[in-house]
Image (cartoon, rainbow, N blue to C red):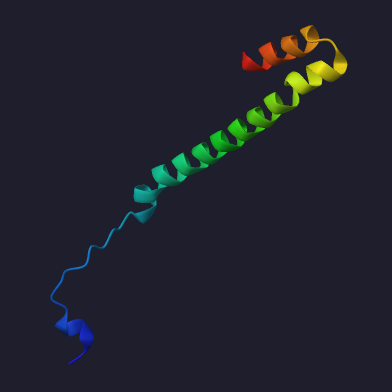
Length: 71
């Protein structure tokens, strides 16, 4: 007798696998994009921080740019 004939546990066959996994895959893409955006913002604010203000001697233009990014 074949192994298939001895199976006592029923399998769960999903006819619509794509429908089951489309939403989680889509959410994964959205969260990956969100993560990239957060990293870019973090790097941006690190560049436009106090060190740059000290080097340039002018904080007003840097603050204006930072405020625009925050918006």
